[in-house]
Image 1 (cartoon, helix red, strand yellow):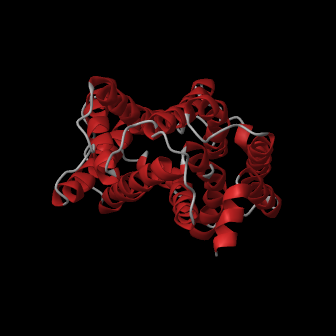
Image 2 (cartoon, one colour):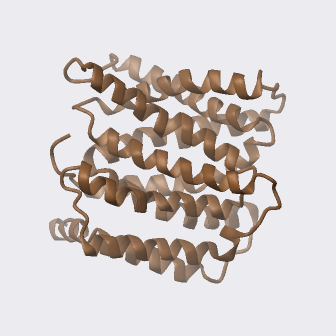
Image 3 (tube, one colour):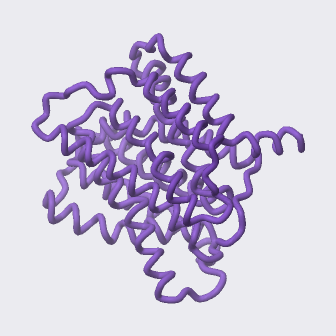
Length: 307
């Protein structure tokens, strides 16, 4: 897309929703890993999401590109699919076996910092300014305060270093896919979200079979519900919202959701699992909100002026 990003009230609502949904995904993934090995967790997520999205897309007549794509655009579509689903899902599921959930949360927040220089050169209307950089750094400081020392605590796993690299690799995949997604030609958002999951499934399935063999049987209705939730809510529905945000408001704005994810992860853990709330929560939330406000001051000002 050659037009500058357009940030609206709906854009803010969508990233707030994504923050809540993805904030609870780490907790659900930990549960799913009790029933399936990591690559099969990723494949189950993508497979169920692909089925749901395919049904919806078919009922709408299967629209996709507004004009027939060329080879380069098809190649970009395949690359976006691998970087937005297959690889990061597998890397995170594997990495979470060997690192703390705090570290996984910090690695997702780093997406914004990875995106800043990339978007400056590759996405129209996403120039890197001192105000925007200051806002992102303040937000990242808030994430660090929230997680505290737990983020970098040792788990005792032999593969802890590899697990940390895997989480950072997943963050890099998300950053690159957002840039490439924004640069695709005019496309139907539901069609794009569906095709991304279908291509992702074609990659994830053989990867899981080669790495882990046939999947183990799941005879627990509870575990089946956990896998279904992972496929439908944080994968199918959230993938559609992510496409909408990136295509309309831009990848840098989309990256703001990753500052919210650790906050919601902590809050949901306290509400649903009776985990203790860290005393630094309010400080962290203040820094994160300040960072969001500073980095997106122009969009917020236009929003409230119109309101």
